[in-house]
Image (tube, one colour):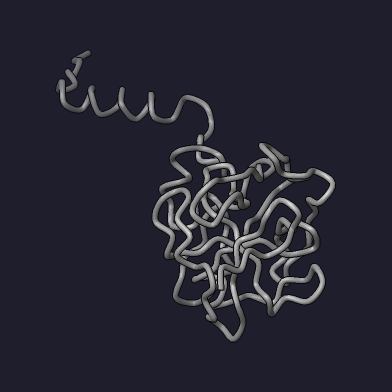
Length: 179
């Protein structure tokens, strides 16, 4: 019987494939650094025909405080600023489609966690029309702004996009309006 030898390059590729197939799950949870660099920061956005959807969060979202020129305001676990939208009435989210692409909702897969000066008693959730679960604070659905590039940015503050005002929230759940 004749044996064939496998080239070193093929052997190396097979070994790499075997190693890549092993190992644990992804670390791209909403609070991981890799998720912070994704377009929606590890949170799913409302699907549309022109946008791809990030994976849904794999654990509870953390809501914490951030300090900046506007004072102390709410942020997600990566320090990205969270906003309320004045068009939302009650705890129901009305931002979807193009709105949710520009203002991705803060999603969670479990009861959200409070950190910093955030009041756990004010945290809640609401079901979105696409079936995902969005974090609320003092009854306000929470969103990030796609134009905020780094943790602590507040470029969305005071925007009137999609027909109503967008504002950061203080720890009492009130909008911070610098005007």
